[in-house]
Figure 1: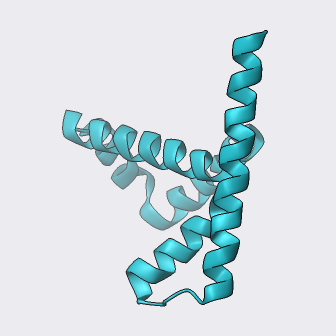
Figure 2: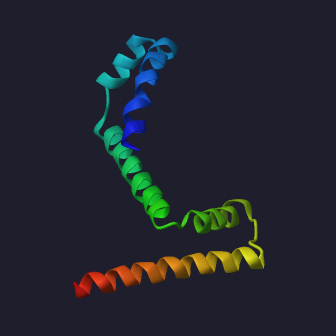
Figure 3: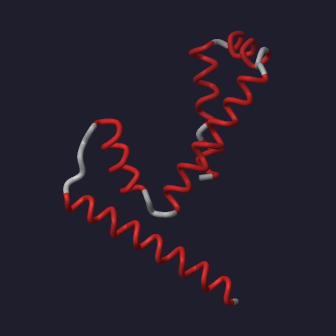
Length: 105
């Protein structure tokens, strides 16, 4: 992830200079407000925390099912609900085991 964070901006900077023109970019950077900086940092931090939290805990399938249900009104089938429940149970068991083993040692 660090690699993509360092490599992706390299081609995008020249592209933005061509598309947006250097004077427009300079003006935008020179007139950043505290609100713009704060909202950008909050958005980046929240998406990072939420996104990586879901990814690391293996909850991507469950988050996908919930998002489809909330946003698109797709009702999960019984087998999808059972699969999501099994996944949540597995994550819970693994997490609780790690915590109990950490407390012992």
